[in-house]
Length: 107
Image (spheres, one colour):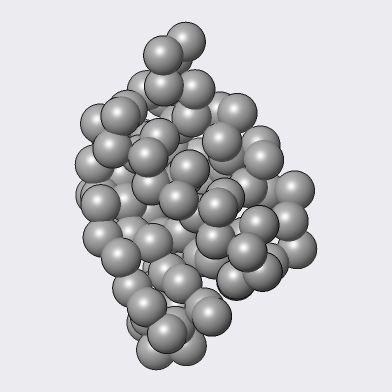
């Protein structure tokens, strides 16, 4: 199955849980894409000891069935640069991800 998870918040607990679900889906053999939009492009900045988002992202990115794409406009509004855990993309990427997915989940 192909999943797209949309993160639109920078809430640490919410994003940590979404990424835990993403990693579980990968372990079950699914393909998982994460699209970051709005304040979701800041998701990695809220990692902490209790909600270790960085660890979840590192695990996620080890899979060849995992992909993260961030809204370029949302990043520009926040003066953010493209990184491995927040690579710049656009609405065309978002459209492609959701039309190719079997399930789309929003957090």
